[in-house]
Length: 314
Image (cartoon, rainbow, N blue to C red; front, side, top):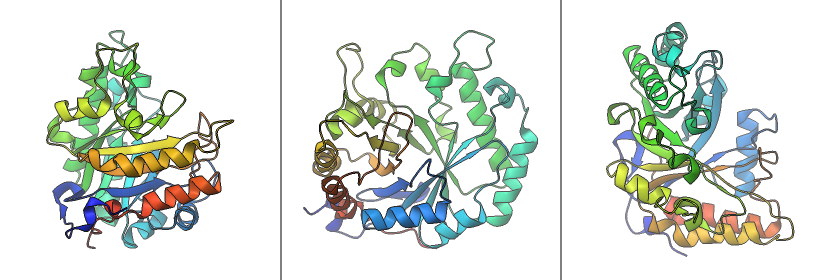
């Protein structure tokens, strides 16, 4: 199968947007305890190609990118760094300046040690953490204010190379909440929008993963349709996606990966697809090679020319 990205050279526009096809990425061997370099090397050998994007997780006062992570980027990969700034403070606290010193320290570290463009998402999947009661400090409005505070303060501290990503869970039950639209921090601080969908027993194929509609939420159009309508000028990233093992159906992963390969070109606003590879994900096993058939299908998908965008020049 020949991907659409093979017919002409691809270029990389501002904000790391490929002009054709999409980036291929992975969060490698999550929850295994392996350090990033080893986990990524193993995952790339398992899937039969190098990753364009490596998804990494940081929290609180950790400084990033680390030396090890910078080494991965020097080898012609892009970093997607997922940062939760604090578990001790509410979003309202952060928006009011409670961790400004932490943000400033991080800004100095990035400005001093890392000048390449990288993706940054701030407290991903906030829907599950919203407490809608006024004064909770964790309302949707508080989230938007927190996100803005973090991004604007990093920029003021000299971080001009962070390509910012707003990452939603990608579930219609949260999208139906009256506060859902108020989570968005604003176009001036968000470069890409993202969703983190997983193939559970409600999802049969890639169309269902990206654009699923449910009878119990008849007014929800599906996340891809909603993002097209809500963010027509922004690239979409699938910042985490995973396929769980199904007992009694060993062929499910294989067929699911085949459906991604057949259908990805029908979603041209998706400019990055980043797999969450873990034997111990919170709801199950998302390893792409849990069976030989799944591994072959995933390797075929990963090697498809649709995902062979021109690497970022360093």
